[in-house]
Length: 603
Image 1 (cartoon, one colour):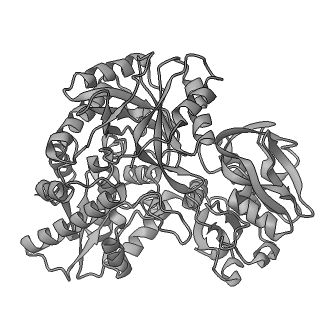
Image 2 (tube, rainbow, N blue to C red; image 1 turned 120 degrees about the vertical axis):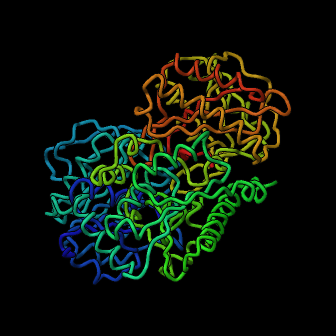
Image 3 (cartoon, helix red, strand yellow; image 1 turned 90 degrees about the vertical axis):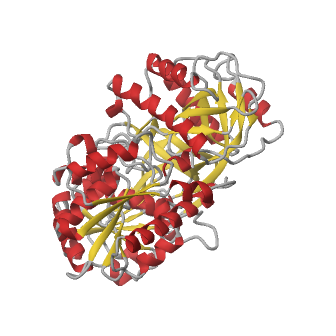
């Protein structure tokens, strides 16, 4: 594709850089990710440029910058969050710490939406998604204010003559109600409408696969049975022929209940040439005493490689003849810190150093590496995958390993009382406790590892619970997640920590709870209303040697952002009572945290 038909998305290390590119592609314009350190010559032939967000502060000495001459090329530029602040600073404006960080929904008042090309089609009041700690305090010459929020005066600005625009919010996430209208306006300003589609991707990727995999080589694909690896198989088989693609399913001992048996049966129906290896004892042995989430992911990634090597050897496959295939998609790369300036949120099992080295040597092929989950599903449909496959909930490659929280984290002195006192403004009946272990989150594009706050069941108003969870995680950096205890007006005095071991006994316990939840989802026919629903085992209870379960249903389109799912109370009560009937389970929590600040998975 000619470069002047593309929009460049400049990666400043934000969690949303590739999401912006993906969103714009889904709106019909082709995008490419560029580094802020690429030469100005590389930018000159693009039809438009988007500066992404990022975790740094623009006034910091080592924060990523860009050649200011890019702003003088006469090419339309849209700065988002950090990109907005950086372009403002480079053109003579001023950026400071806001003193009032925002992570979540906000309302923007658009002053005259019909006046400017970039705001046409927007209403006078727009709901947007904020994620920032800094903000613009002074505009460069020639800029006007298009929109403001209560706490951010320069939330939407621009110089219409130069076609340079800046926004403090994130239009690329679904939580910004009309973000697609704004992005479509920018696409139209750049004159690149209808330059990309999934059909075009299929045509392009098949050529890339055929060039990467020489005629004498074949692909040994690591299969989880999820949407990603299944679609990767179909695309590879379409490009190379089914006889040149073989699947390996590794039973880690941390799969869902009956998962391996069901997968073997269903994958066979799709024509998979599948090898199954039971490696559960190796995984259990390697994970004895391991609690740190990063270490756990590293162990799992390396064990997958070991299992693949053993399978190749025992099947008498010539290693020089076979490439390793993976169903890696964009979030796997982004959250592992796979872009130049991005902050590591978590290392995915298919991004451990050993696998990264194979990628760099050209020994791994990842045909879905440019796509997000919804794009993968659309691709699967176009390749003939039945809806029961494309609609399956995502399941992490490491399986239940990342849904068994084993780490302990002490609670800060007096923090519980401080939070309780602060939240009384919402309702005098609120009770709060902190749980004695951490979970992974993402706030301001950075990884957080903080405690979880528990609320009692003082209201059935989901919107109020959402507001409290958002406010609490914005106010207190020591927490990144909020749950509540369904049906319990009074909370226990304290939750006791119990060591959680990643063994067969406890993974069986979690398997049973997970199976119970999904049985209810399917029986109530609400499975497709939920994007994903991790069922998590956590190391605490009302008594020693008890564990609890967290229900984490979310709504999302691309997994980079998510809202918690407002579950019918009758369904939730059914789940709670069914799970608590399992021996060894103390309590059932319901996760109220959006993403950000909490990741979808707890680790």
